[in-house]
Amino acid sequence: METIHIPADAIRIISTSSKGDQSKWRVGDKWVKQNTRGYEGQAEVLASLVLTHSTLKQTDYVMYHPCEIILPYGDKSMGCYSHDFRGKLQEVTLERLFEANFTSTDSILNDKSLSTGEKFEQIMEQVQKFTGLDVRVQIAQLLAFDALILNVDRHTNNILFLYNPIEKTWQLAPIFDNGLSLLSDEKDYTQGKPLTILKRKVKAKPFNSSFSKQLALYTGPAFIKKQALLEAIESSTIDFGRAKQVLLSQLNDPIFKHLFVEGSETHD
Image (cartoon, rainbow, N blue to C red; front, side, top):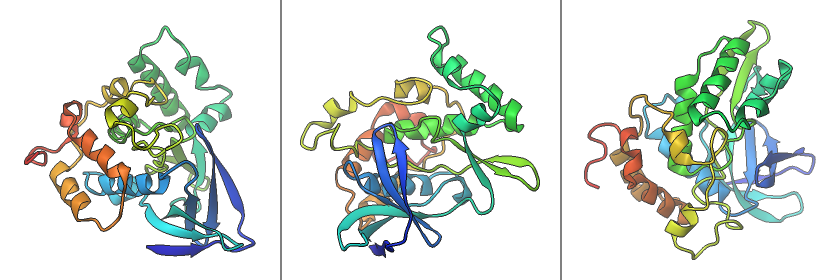
């Protein structure tokens, strides 16, 4: 495991999530995130492992690595790091994209008369109008992945677009920020309690609080290579703790069967 020393002059960035603030630093070309509520770093790394055993391209997601963090005054903490994927592109969250066009996602997402599918379609229609991008399949796939890992933090500031100011073009950013998944928040999901009870507490975002309803938005091809993933989990030298138990439980849930590439779900 890599050890990363945070320089005294490093700028601490407070990354706001639905669960509160998390400390993050830019050190060279690395973004370093500190565990604050439990084992977010382990969950982030395990989520990366899932994506490496999918049909997605490496450029479609951000890889996270475990690390020990040495703070400027010698205190130690656990966390994870990733490399900066933005380059010279400007990042614009889904929410900021709407705000830049003098509107908000709230009017759609908070409309109780709309179904989950209708909310999704209206948001995607606006995104296409603002950027020219049709990302319906990619966003629905992201939500299916979130359902598998029980990501409770996919709010509208955790869906990101990248803008090229020179070419004036848009692209969807790679999948990132999956730390509040796999019951990593030990303050809300206490260690020692049965997973079946804890999993009933989780709430999805942003189109519905039900993971199964957001999962139903994805009707594309299977993309998780389940058997290869299981073998990678068992052979990994990383101690994933409870995150591993949660993921194995999810992989055995028949609701996700359509996500597994044919032949990759054998030997359950």
